[in-house]
Length: 314
Length: 283
Image: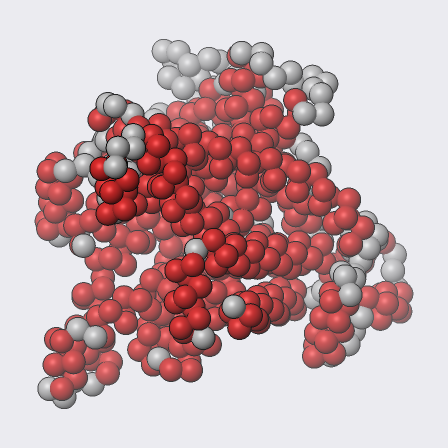
C-alpha cells in the first residue's frame, strides 16, 4: 500500500516539475521579456539605465539557467514574482481571486454530479425506448455547445424572458445560480455518459442477476449493487475533467463579469502579464495533479481489486 | 474521398443506432458540412449583402423577410455575416488540426516505432502537456505569439499535439504486432518502407476519424478564443467574435447571439457525427 502511494506521489512531483519547466520555457520564448514589453514604451520616458535597473530588480538580466533555478526556488516558497502590469506581488492577486473561483467550481462540481446521476438514472429507468435514446444522446449534444454561448443563452432565457433570476442587484447566492449552471452543464455531460455506460456494463454482470433472482427489485439492485460499482470510472473521469473546469471558469467569469482566477487569466493575456499567467498555469497543474492523486488514492481505498493488482505489480 | 468512405458510414448507421449519437442519421450531418463548405468557398454565391458594411437605417432589425436572421447594430445582415464567417471557422479548424496531426503523428510515430527509453520519456512529456488545461496552454501561446486568427489556430493546434501523439503511438503499437507487418520485415523491408507501405495505410482511417472529431473540438476552442477577443479583430465576421459583439445588445436583440451560436453547434455536431461513424465503420 505504501509503495503505491509513494510511487504515485513521485509521479505527481515529476509532472509538476515538468509543468513548471514547460511554463518557464514558454516565458523564455517571449520576444524580449515582460519588463521590456512594459517599460520600453517611449512615452514612459525611461532611460536605458532605468530599464537596466528594473530588469536587475526582476532578475531578468541573469543567464537562463540561473533564472530557472531562482524561479523554481521562489515558486517553491510560494513567491510568484510581481505582476508587471499592476506591480503587486502575483501571490496577492492569486490569493484575492482564488476563493471566488473555488466557490464557483465547487458548486459547479456538486451540481454537475447531481445532474449526471439524475440523467443517467432517467435514461436507465425510462420505460420508453425513444426517451432512453434521447436521454442517452443528450451528453453528446451538450459537449458540442460552446460554454460561453450556454451562459449567454441562460441569461437570456432565465433572466430576461422568464425573469426567474434578477439581473439587477441579485443576492449573493442568486448571483451564483446562472454561472454555476453554465459551468456545470458541460461537465455533467461527460460524467453522465460515463455513468450511463458504466451502469449498463455492470447491470449485465452475474452478481446483479443473482441479486435479481433472489427477488430484489430493479430499483433496489441499482441502488445497492450497481451504483457503487459504477461510480469508480466516474470518479476517474471526474479527475480528468478539472481542465474543463478551469477553462470553463475563464469563460464563465468573463461572460458574467465575476472576479476570479479565470477572469484574471483572461486579463493577464490581454495585458501580456506573463508572470500572472505563468502562476495560474502552475497552480492549475498543481490542482490537476492533487485532484488526480486524491482520485487514485480514493479508488484504491474503495476498490480492493485495484489494490491487489497494483500490489502484484509493485 | 473515395466512394467507400462515403458509403460505409451510411450503411452502418441505417442498420443500428448507437445510443450515444443524436438520432439524426448522417444525411443532415453531411448536408451541414457541404453547405458550410460551399459558404466558405463562395460566400458571394449565397448572399448579395456585405459582411462588413451595413445598410444605414437598418440597424438591429428583428429577423424578417428582408433579413432572414435580422441585422446587427451597424445594419449588417446577420445571415450574410454568418455565411462569410464560415471561411474563418473552417480555415482555423484546418490549420489547428493540421498542426496537431503533423506534430502529433511525428512524435507518436517515433515514440511507438523506436520504443524503449525514448518512448518512455516522450510519453511522460505528453502526460505533462495533458496535465495543463488546454485553454490555459493556448492562452500561454497566445500571450507569446500575439493576437490574430492564425495565432489562435496555431495555439489550438499545439494543445492537441499531445492527444494526437497518444493516438498515433497506440495505433503504431497495435499495427506493429500484426503478423503482416512482421512478415514485411521478415521479407527484407526497410523500416521506413514498412512504415509507409503497411503501417500507415492501416492506421489512416482511425486517425482521420479522430482528426474529424478533433476538428469539432478545435472549432469550439477557436470560437471561444474569438469570443474572448484574441482572434481576428472586428469587423471580421468570425462566429465567436460575433457572439461577443452581440452580447452588448442581449436585452433587445436575441438573434445576434442565438444564430452564430447555432452555426457553431451545427458544424460541431455534424463533424462529430461523421467522425464517430467513421470510427464505428473502422472497428
